[in-house]
Length: 542
Image (cartoon, rainbow, N blue to C red):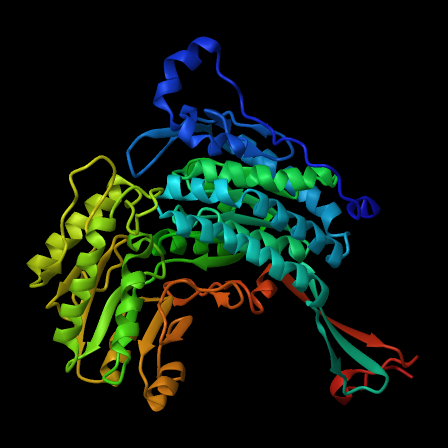
C-alpha cells in the first residue's frame, strides 16, 4: 500500500447522492436553490437535491432528512439524509480498522496524502467557499478565507510530517539512554459548530492524519451541505490513493452526538460549541477516561489605552465586532476604553457603523460587508439581549433593530452605559452586539477583561511598551489569545488556537497543538549489558 501512495492517478468525478424520481423532480425543482442556474456551483461540488450524510467508505444515510436553508433569503438549498446511531457505530468500527492500516504508513507519506487534500481543496476553493457563505451566512471573502484556512493547515501539516519528534534525555545511569516518542492516539472524533463548518474540521483533520490517526466527523446540523461537500473532496483523495476511509462522516442529531461522545473507541474528541454543552461533553469523555479538546465560547474584550492609535483601534473594532455578523467565538463583545477617550471613541465608532448600513445584504452579493445571522434563534437572542440591556440601564448608541426583509438580518449594535459586571455584559450573545465600557486605567481594564468566565481572545491597543508587556505577562490577560494592536478575531493557523477557563483549555491548529493528537511514551534503553536501578537502589540476592 505504501508504494502505491507514491503514485498519483487521474481524478474521477465525485460520488453523487440519490436522485429523486422524475415526477418528484418536477414538483420540487423550483423549491431548492440547487436547481437554479445561478447556484450551479453546488452541483460542481458533487451535491444533489437530496444527499446522503454518512460516509465510511461508501455513502448512505438512513436517518431523518434535514433541509439546509440560506439564512440570507430563508430559501431551501438542498436536503441531507442524516445518519442514525447504528450507522454511527458502524462508521466508528470501520474508521478504527482504517486507523490500524494508516498508523503503519510513514509520517512523511501521510503528509503527502494531506498535501493532496490541500491541492484538491485549491481546485474547489471557489465553489466550496461560496457554499460556506451560502449555508452559514458569512460574506463571500470570509467563505473563501475559511477554505483557505483548511488549505493552509494542510501545508503546515505537510512540513510537520517530517519534523514532529520526541527527544533524547540524559540518563543518570551509565550506558542508558532515555527516549521520548509521540505515537498516534487512534480514532479522533470531531464535532464542529455552524460558524466555521469547514475550517475547524480542517484544523483537526490535517494534524490528526499527519500524526497517524483516523477521523470521524459530525458536522453541525444546520450546515450539513458543507460537511458532505468537504468529505467528498477528502474521500476522492483517499480513493485514488487506494486508502481505506481514514476520514468518515456521520451527520446526525443529538442522539448521534451523544453516542459519539460516549463511545470508548473514540480516543480523542474535539468539540466546538457552547460552554454548557462543552462542560457536559468534557464530563462524559472524562467518565470513560478519553481525551478531549474543548473549543467553547468567548467573551472577548478589546482594550483601548490612553496612548492607543485610535484609527487602528476603530478599524479593529469594526471587523472584530461585526465580522461574520458577530458569530465568531473570537468576536469582540466588549470594548474597554480609557475614560479620557470613551466619548469620542463611541462617537467615531458610530460613524463607522453608519457607513456599513448600506452594505448589509445577501452574503454572496459583491457589495455586502454584513450578512445575515444564521437562524431565527440568533435573531430572537439578539432582540432579547438588547431589551435586557435597556432594562439594566444601557443605552443603544447605534443599531438595535431587526431588519424587515426576507432572511435573518439585524443591525450591528453598540450599547453604552452599562456596568462592567452587568449580567448581560458577562453573557456571550452570538450576534453583532458590543458593549463599550469606560475604565480609569489599564489595570482596571485588565481586571474587567479577566472577570468573565471565558478566556478565549483579547486585545489591547497601546503605544506604551510597559503596558504592552504587562498585558502579555502574568499580571495581564488570562486568555489563550493575547493580542497587541490587532483584532480579537482572525487568528492565523501557525499559532495554537484556544482559550482558558470556560473556553475549555483546548488547543488546535499550529505551534505544538499536534501533541494533543498523540500519546507520549518515555522509553529507557539499557545498552550496558548489566542491570542497574535508578536512584542508586540495590536489589539482588547475590
